[in-house]
Structure formats: C-alpha cells, structure tokens
Amino acid sequence: MALAARYRRAAIKQQLVTANWQSGNDITAQVRMRFSSAPAIILNTTANWAITPVKQQHWQLGWQVIPLQQQQVKLRWRQLPLQQQHTLTHWRMAALKQQQNVATWGVSALHTQQLQTGYIYPGITAKRFDLLWRTDGEVTRYYRLPYGPRPPSYICTQNYVPPSGKVTLRFIDPAQPQQGNVTLRFSNANNPIVCVLDNGGGLMPPSPEVPTIDTSRPIRPARRRSYIMQPQLRCYRVSDNLEINIISASWAINRSSWAANITLNCGSRIDRDRLLTGGPQLFKLVVNGYELFGLAENGSMSHSFGQSSWTITGRSSIAELASPNAAARSYTNTTSKSVAALITDELDNTGWSLNFDMLPFNVPAGAFSYQNKTPIEAIAQIVAGIGGMLYPDGSTNTLHVKPQWPVVPWGITIATADVAVHDDVILNYSESPASTPACNAVFVRGEQQGVECKVRRSGTAGDVLANDIVDPIITDQLAARQRGTAELAECGRKTQISITLPVMQDLPLCLPGTLLGVAWQTDIYKGMVDSVNLTASRNNDGSMTVRQTVGVIRSYE
Image (cartoon, rainbow, N blue to C red; front, side, top):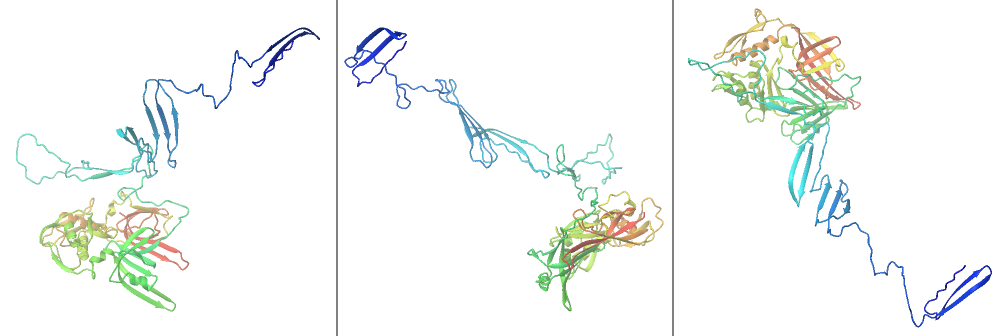
C-alpha cells in the first residue's frame, strides 16, 4: 500500500490528492477527489521556527525565586603585585532586600581587613598578627596579638639581692634606750640597679649566647686548621673624616702610662702635613675593625738614595690635656671632696667624662695639692697614689680608672679569664724571670691629714714587710687598703712573658689590666696583661701584617 501527497504554495489554483489501493499488480479500487483552495480557506495552521525574529513568547531559565530583589556575596583575593582580582557569585533568597559579605585578603594597601605576618631570623625584632573588622567604613573592633620569639634584652630591678657571706649592719646615730622590740625597716630606694641578661627566644633561642664584657665567660678564639686573615689598616682625620694614606702604624700602652704612644709612617709628605696643618690633629686609626684614636703631635722626614719616609708621632687623644697642649697650674682643694670629684674637676670643660671603677673615699680640705701640673698629670698623681691605672677611650672620650691589679695574684686561680688564647693562635712565645721579695705586709700612710695603716695579706702572718708608702692622698683606710694591695701584688715570684698574637674578630686587642688565660703546649695558666704593642705594616708585595705583642705577668702564688 502506498500513500502519496503533494503540496503547492499560493500560486497553485488546484491541488489534487490521489489515493490508490492495490493488491499485487491489479488496482482493485480508485477514488478521486478534487478541490480548490483559492475561494475559501477552511483551516489554516502555520508553524514557524525562528530564533531572532520571534517576539511572541520569551522563555528564559535563571537561578532565582521571584520574590527576591537582590543579595550578593563578593569574594576578593589580592596579593602584592596584583592590583585587582575577584570572582563574583550571585544568588537570591526570600524576603531579603540587601545583604553583602566581603572577605578581603591583603598585605599592605587594603583597609577593610588586614592580615600581616613578619618573621626575621635570627635577629627577630617584631612579629604580630592584626585583625580589623569594619562595618560601613568604621572600625568596630580591633585586636592585636603579638607573636614570635622575643628579642634579647636586659631585665633590671632595684630589689634587694642577698649577697654571699655575712651581712654587716652599721649604725651611725646612737640608739635611744627603749622598751619592747626594735623594728628595722629596709627600703629598696637606695639599692643599686641590677640587670640580668634575658637571652629571649621561645622554644628555640633566636641566637646563640654571645659572651659580653659583663659576663663571666672568656673570649676564646676557635681552634681551626687554618685562619683566613683579611688585615685592614686605615687612618682618618677626625675633623672632616679625610682618609690619610699610611704604610705602617704602631700603638703601644702599658699599665703605668696614661696614654698610648703612636707612630704612623705616611705615604707622602702631603699626608703627613694633613695631620699637622693648623696644629695637632685628632685622627682615627682602624686596624682590623678596631678603632684607636690619637693626637698627631710631631712630624719628621728621612731621605736616602732613592727612598724617602715621612713619620708622624703622637699619643692617645687624652694628650689634649697634657703639655704642650694644655697649660700647667697649681691647685689645693679648699673643700672636702671625694677622690672621684677631684678627678672630675680636672676634666671640667674638656669634653671628657670619668668612669671610676675603684672604691671611693673622702679627701679632707687642704689634704691634696700639686704644683705646675697639667690636668692629666694631676689625675695620674691621684690614681697612682691609690694604686690605680688609667686607660683613655677616645671613641667615647671616657677616662677609665681601675685598679692596677683587678685580680690579685693570690686570687687568680679561682678567677675567670677575660680572654683565653691557645697555641693555635700564638705566633711567638718567650719568657724571662721577674721575681721580687715575697712580702706579705706594708705600711701605708698619708701626710698631714692622712691615716697610717698596716696592710697585711690575708692568711699570712704579715711578718715580711715591703718598703713603706707615703702619699698625701692616703686620707682614708680604703685608700690605704687599695694602695697596699697594689704594692703587695707586685711582690713574689713572677715571670715576664711576651706573646705575639693576631688581631681577629674573636681575638680582640688585649688591653692592660686584662686577665689572660694561656694554653701553651702542656702549660695552662692565667696572667695579668701589663702591656700591649700593636703593629700593622704593608709589605713590598702589597700584603699586610697585623700583630699584637702582649706582655703578661705570671705569678706563682
């Protein structure tokens, strides 16, 4: 069975539909039907498929519920080199007119919420965590949480620290008899301030414990197979920081002198004259990072065939208070003053300050005087009279006064060395005997207003006397005790030792009064530094050599 259908557009006036039924090869029935569509249209159905022109019905799929107006969640992520990067997500819910959540991550320039974390190791200085909550442009809550290892610092207190041994109470005013109990009240107002170093850190310390001058650990250079040396020798004029070309330099000082003797070998006549123009000039000598200050006082020149040299000689910068740079005068104390005040009077209006590290005592009026002496000579007379020594620090313009023997020979065995050296850094070693009679007592007396005391070494009979000491500054038992201790410390069997050492970062200049620990071959001992001579020179091949020769007194007590 077959069905055929034909379709024609409006221009066709007649349309014929023919349906034939057949069985096999014979047509058993045939029906013909004719009609015309032009005069009347009974039923017309039209279906058009289009995308752009169709306007009748719009069907759009969105993510929404009709009653909602607007709700927005905004997520922004910002990192330092990026200026803007964000992602927007919109959805709507019922009954809400407007709601906005802002989450911002920023490092430096954001204002709504800031999260900042800083970490520096090993020198941690600050680490914090800041959170800001902001609504409608105003900060409603602020909270700061410090976090991280704390830096090293000193913790100081004026609370009473119990000393070791016995406590002695001295009452000046006579007591009034009374009945009942006597109540003693102690105040912390007059206690000294004691500072303890807090290494800081948290579970792990931020840096290793480095010994300082205030600790009881000696400065000890490490043992190495080889030491890489990078010598440095520089000289600058202090007034304008002008560098002076020098070829070699030497700097030497001992316990009995108040200034170091300095010699500079300049590279040219111009360099020599730069330190002498307009009078003596202050200069700064830098040797392997250590700064030494001096005053250029004299210049000289030496010439031979094909070779010339220009030399500057001077002393430490404290020489400004010595002849010929300062005038001599005579003085008598008209009022009672402490020994430190007498020294401070000599330093007035000089730019120098005093660090007095000895036992103070009072000097009565008229007990101390001198004739035709410069300020530094008068100070040296006072300090020598009480068994002390001087060291000028030109970097801070501070004059240090301390005992000639900070540690007495009979107490060296239990003392801690300031600097310890071993045979890996000892370049030259020599020794010679320097023994004196083993005295154990000495008489020390003043003059008109002085006191007379017999200073005896503790634990001895005091039967071997040293030569008597007479000095007008001995006006108190503390003055006699300090001077007598210095005299007895010089007595006994001793050895003068000369040790040549390099100057490195972990091996500084060994100044007079330093307690030096020495490990030389199989011999281990401690001695007092009596002198030091620092030399630095450039060789013909351009290399440089820096050495310090330390004079050490070893006592066999």
